[in-house]
Length: 364
Image (tube, rainbow, N blue to C red; front, side, top):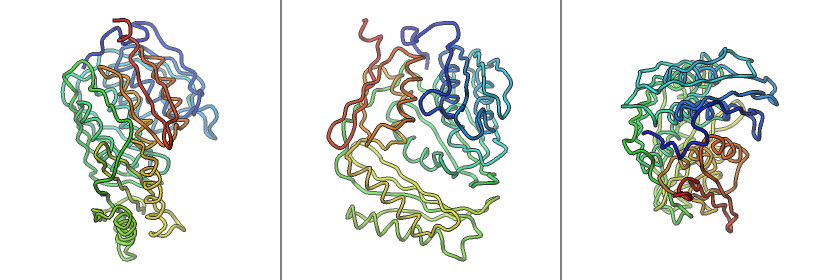
């Protein structure tokens, strides 16, 4: 995939980015460096995670940027925890196998986000072996990427394969994921036009946990409660699998999704000390049903993650979300710094429509 020059905000030079803008988290770092690698336009970030209790880069951010730099032979300033300024000067994206380790329970899902975006510009299929946390707080579970996000990317013309080889929980991590990307041959992605969602066709999911929790039947109890809740609501038997596996730290979780005629809506919940298996299932199912009842076409997490891809489509796209999060607002601002697109949000009943309009099409 080669981005037409007219789609770029600038064709050379370096974009200076205040990384404390909006939500001000690591998302700005990952997305900015991924777009830099993809477009060939350098970026200079300052005030990285300035408002966080531990400002600057964390190990997972360093791993993500290091991987992006290897993909495009980028020159960067020092990549180490605590750094609050970063310059990323990309070279040419090239296919290569990568093995990245956060060294902690840093989210594999978040590291994968940047690699997937930059992977659009590779010249052929590429495999990444990623180590860290597969299911950790405040980050997308790898099952969500595999079962929800992957479906939307495929619809847009971008095929990926993701296999969870070992799960990693907080605090020790140790999870392993095999990620393969197949870059699209077309110069731009296929637009999405999803104004809203209609009735659900059914629901699926996976209930998982560490082997040390098997005697307590944690996975089975999470699954049973989720199946009961979803089946009662949708009147179609929910299909939720069970999985136990070895892990460096004990942990459990539940990832579920509902399929409508138009889209897939996802939700998840993690187990933790003091939270029962029933509470894990209740949290995930209540969240999913609340999203479904809004009749939005995508959940809030995909609404955030899909924005850069909408900006790389061959025409206007439209999705709807239950509400616009700060992460979404920040991502819109950032994407518009790199690309000639405009995002527009409009409240429509119980959801908000988000339109991505390529500015270059208006000039042709």
